[in-house]
Image (cartoon, rainbow over all chains, first blue to last red; front, side):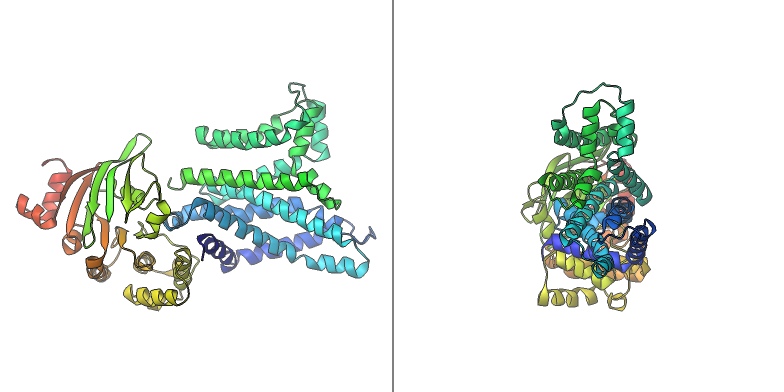
Length: 289
Length: 239
């Protein structure tokens, strides 16, 4: 068996070896199932899952932070990281194996919400394509947040710090795209920056690189500073547009409309690849410290 | 089988290993001996490719640790200090995971488990989770993990630390049994252990090799017990 699969299998099993997995699943399913009904699922009299999907990003911000916090923090705390990296396993195999196991775990949690689909199918005649892209979007959001959690788990040995930092980052990435935030930013923008909209991918990559550099050169406080960077980056309408495009929210929203655009999928792919790469680099740096 | 050339590694201002070179062949049991903080663990971590040296290199069974770390790791078994493991796993599950990573599958896996489990006498705890084990059992599970692929090179970091006298005796007996067809490097600061198992002893202090000799020679040369020799050498009274 390939070392990647070995790590993947062990990680997935370890979720179910402790009561942790079941507690998560129950909490997730209860909250995910409760919120749509509280927000008027029946009253809307529409056979779709819009009210179900709309809560998922925020819920996943919490879930993914908690699921990902143990990935590397625990490994380093217990010392088993020394065992893992003296076995014939490369950093890439280990990082990917663990990340994908956690992603699959969240995928299982997401699949277990199938009664919602059964309900709308029973009550009406829903657009299955819309539901499928909805689930795909939710799964990609879970992956994006997990990759962030994975990174912070490699940054610190403390699971609590890892989960808080990751939740903070997830919330920022999510909330900068909310209309209220964008409104506020465009009103208070002081016009220091005149950036064209085409700079979006470059800004995203530069941001991740900045984060890594800040961490390596200056340590934890600098990292927090770097995290606040996009938030403090107020400016003209254009910059607000950039921030909006960097936010996870609008890419998720457009998938909820049943539109599967290359740009949206690419956004998630870049987000995940960027944070996972950062995770591997950081882990290589500090596995022994 | 192990070639170490001028390995050097520092952590910030502290030089942990300061240019260590030695080589060891099949059939040798090399004891790395030194006071705490001498750089024994750091040296072993570099040979097992866990951390990278600042300069210098080493090779294990012909696999260079810088250019082919996976090959080097594949041909060695390593028991780290405190024998790290996954606490929530059972002993059986843990050993099977090691087999998976080392690509030992099917009938070979059963063979390997049947060989290694009685060898380390962990049959009685096979289905127990590792966090419930005593230190001695944990250490032996770590040893089983290091032996499962029957490696040519075995690197053991303080293998008897924290064991009771009977268990210490057991581990030493095990090392002696394996000595003839493997190359074993153990680190320790217990001198009686050196006399009991090592065919060669390398005394390290402050990251440098001070003496590379056999326990017998050392005693004859200095006309003293190993204990006194060690103190003399590491405290710098005799060069």
